Length: 166
Image (tube, rainbow, N blue to C red):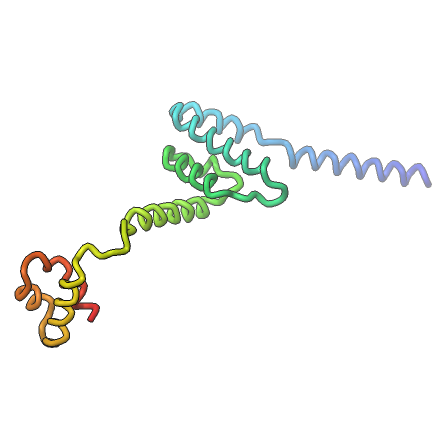
């Protein structure tokens, strides 16, 4: 009786091992299809994909449990993704939607910084601004075109904005 129980346990363990081997074994058809598809891709695409994979490995080695991406990591992955059409297949620890969001955030940050005023002073003299606001307050029925016609050409560029704000 005791030997039958031991044989049943051994049989069960062998079946579990066989199932685990079957589950964890990589599919050779997928590997061969991937290798064939890589042959059709250009060398630059493969180099960019390799760089993206290396960047993700750097992040994984740096973090303990959950990968923490720095702004530099986000910048590198966004830049590398722009260089190839196959960037979806190179992402393993980041969702494609996340990478697209990072790219939008970078784009927004770049243009916000680029369009920021160089100085805090307006380009138009304060006297001109005061004159336009005074004309708009004294003549509430006048629109921007009327004020623009009554001002000289050096003030016409800012009239639309200033008269709309009053």
